[in-house]
Structure formats: structure tokens, C-alpha cells
Image (cartoon, rainbow, N blue to C red):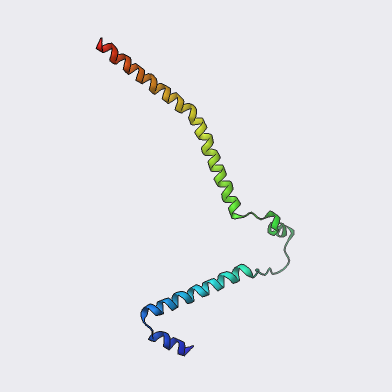
Length: 111
């Protein structure tokens, strides 16, 4: 190990940074994989409520929660859009009436 450190100290700065980067990535990947693979030990027995909570049938996946939120948001937008449809048609009708009124007043002033 000491020989490796001495050899590392003799390398150029770019090479030392690359070795530091790859070794930190390796250590991080090792910790992540071991955290995902090895189960967490439970000290003592689980109560029935904890067993039900941890059962695979009752687990909620993050993607299902995100999907439900997106679905609900689009449902709300769709409902508001349809309610605005009546208001938008009223506004367009009012704008067309105003336009017709301006055209009539412009033609009456020309006469």
C-alpha cells in the first residue's frame, strides 16, 4: 500500500485526480450495491402491523404515486379548461358584438 501511495505521489496531477475519481466511484458503487442487495436485519420479531406494512402486496411504488399525481393534475386542468370553454365562447361572442358595433358606428358616421 505504501509503495502504491509513493507511486501515486510521483504521478502528474491529472493522473492523480483520475485515480481519485475512479476509486471514489468504485467505493460509492460498492456501498450502493451492498445497500441494495443485503437486507436490513430486524432485531426482535415484527408485530402484525409491521408485517402487513412490509408485505409486498401493500407496497406503494414511487412511480405509481407520481403517476397518480400527474393523472390528477391533468384531470384538474381538463376540468378547468372545459369550464373555461363556456367563458371563452362568451368572451369571443362579446368581442364579435363589440366589433360589429364599431363597424356600424363607423358606417353611420360615413353617411
